[in-house]
Image (cartoon, rainbow, N blue to C red; front, side, top):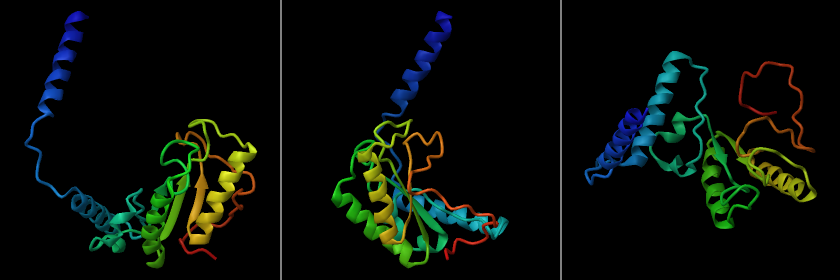
Amino acid sequence: MNRFVSSVRAAFVFLLLAGCGDDLPDLDFRQEMVDFVIEISDYAESEDSTSLIFPQNNPDLWSEDGYLDAVDGIGQEELYYGYDGDGVATPPEVTSEWKEQLGHFRDAGKLVLTVDYPFDDPETPSFTPQIRSKIDSAYSRSQTQGFVSYCAVRELISITVNPGHEPEPNMEPITSLDRP
């Protein structure tokens, strides 16, 4: 067993040191991500024209050539709560910048989904008056922007039904992102 542990430790140290070199590739990681999303979109379209592409976060990519055309919407976490920790309001300057960027998606006819983390516990929702106020605020502010809001615990280990924001039953198959 000690030999195995020593081998694992040696391999770990090797990998750690190998990753410390100064010869990182000269890549434009932003453009690499945009190209990757566009490739995924092109592939999905070629395989099944009903596929939908929803990148998560990084709304600032909206301005990159081809990006908005490649996606059907965007999912944005922490727009109002959770940026600096669970249950903590996102700094107003961050919210303002993201709302402006997400507005470009909305204005292009893309669906903007937001997930906020107003709960203090990352695994268990509680509905104290203070937390319910945060939930109501996130839903209201997103709706005002034309975004679809959801509040959850960070770990997303269960679907949280937020009082006052229960989903409406939908008996028909969803065939479009258009909302009535």
